[in-house]
Length: 95
Image (cartoon, rainbow, N blue to C red; front, side, top):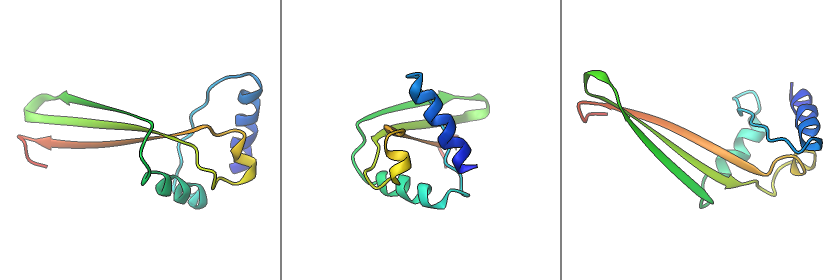
């Protein structure tokens, strides 16, 4: 799977196209790098709050980080940024 993703990245990179990939638990090394990167100051952030029915509120926080130099060499030319999205919710102002 990992090498399929790298091939897709390389294909899109050659076409100057953007590409987003979800980092899942089965990519432990990459997930660890992203987790380390999250401790740094993001280059951009966005927060969205949506009021739902029955007193629910859903909040999404999006943070953009410059790609880490800790990435394996095969990823360094392909990955420019990490995007981290976190979601939380409350009901009647209670978590």
